[in-house]
Image 1 (cartoon, rainbow, N blue to C red):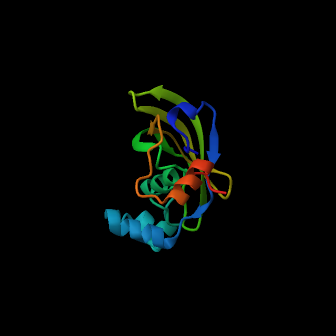
Image 2 (cartoon, rainbow, N blue to C red):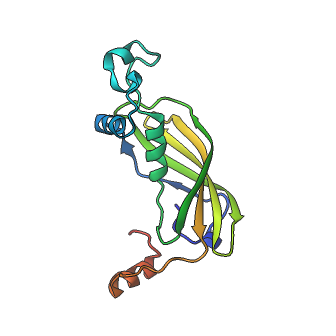
Length: 166
């Protein structure tokens, strides 16, 4: 989605990612990484008696994965700038498959080298439910970075396709 320098982006541009299934391994690894062992995530018996009757994927994991599913070109992405109005609208369960959908809703000049691109980011599951919605902002370069160290043939291929895959 964000594959072009700031000046080549426009309001209303959209993009959709490939799908990704949230697994048991994802949940357990995230519990280990964060120390978030809440029983809604880690205890099957407890979760059976909770509101949804099964374990939930951690919201912070859902957000981390959904925003990382947006296709970026690292030659134009400078930094994650911020997130506003983050809401988890539906639960995400183990074995749910998610897609990211984005639409550029604001373009703001930042400085001589960067602009801020704000997108409406949504996580959509296989049941066509929106599980997550937020305004996701990135600091985007106005000119593409050179790719130091790339062999000439690779650089030429990037220049020809502007970093887009076939």
